[in-house]
Image 1 (cartoon, rainbow, N blue to C red):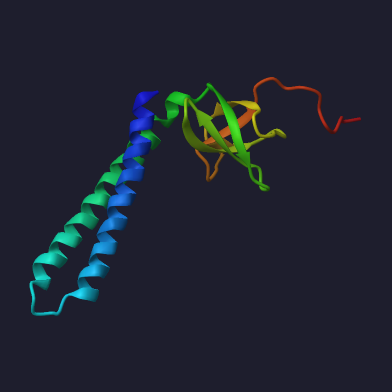
Image 2 (cartoon, helix red, strand yellow):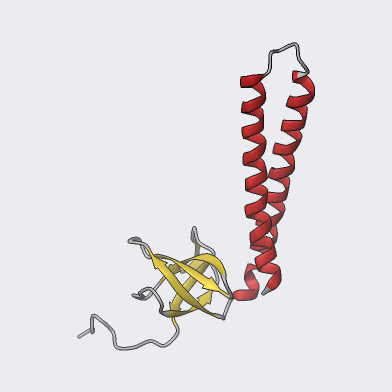
Length: 140
């Protein structure tokens, strides 16, 4: 979806602008003597930093708000960590998902809400395999 991609780009762009504001603050204090217009440059740097933080927060807020549109949709796993968290892509937008089943890179998963047995988790979604195959450990 285009709006999720816009929110993702907004969050990244805001972080970049905030980083540029921090770099500009460091540049101003490192290169300017205290009597040569330091106040105007430092105010501009702080405004740049705050603008970046605001844009980043708006992008993050929109991304979290529109995340529920992806519940029940299919995604592709692009990376799996050791502690069962996976990086999934939905229409090109990356999200973190807690994986219930054993999945590998390139597998398709279905996205569910961000709770496991009623407990919220530190991921955007819970993912289960879209086409469950044979169980690896067969119960006896």
